[in-house]
Length: 199
Image (cartoon, rainbow, N blue to C red; front, side, top):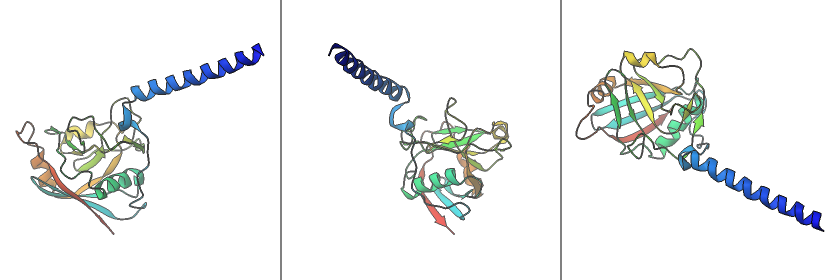
């Protein structure tokens, strides 16, 4: 009988310890922004798709790379269809490097509440006009939520192949470059509306 009570006691203690460990890990992971999830399938691999970004400074278009980066392109398309990007700021502008948006908090720490992972090939280059997903340093290569950046200058070509590629600006690069000159503006440039076109 005593042995049985000891076994039950050990099982209960193990369960409590497991719950405590899970709570600690979740707490350290930053909460809901680090949940690994799967967005709805909006575009299939190889399906032509473009996102039109209407901004406070004009309109530009991004051709999604659904062929080489289907997971990342689909995530971006899914967020666009949900209206996630509408009204968000370009919260980070580094002249000669990148413009960055897609953070609902505007702090550089926000996201959609999940992450997807699609590691880029080792030979990935971030030429001017390339659109890729931002991530924090400790995250695995190709991890992304909703924050994206557009390369606007030669500094972008120094990036290591750690950032999942969405696609490339196909129209309105002059608008992107205009946004790239607004670092420190009293009112940050905004994405008024993002629209997905397929086919």
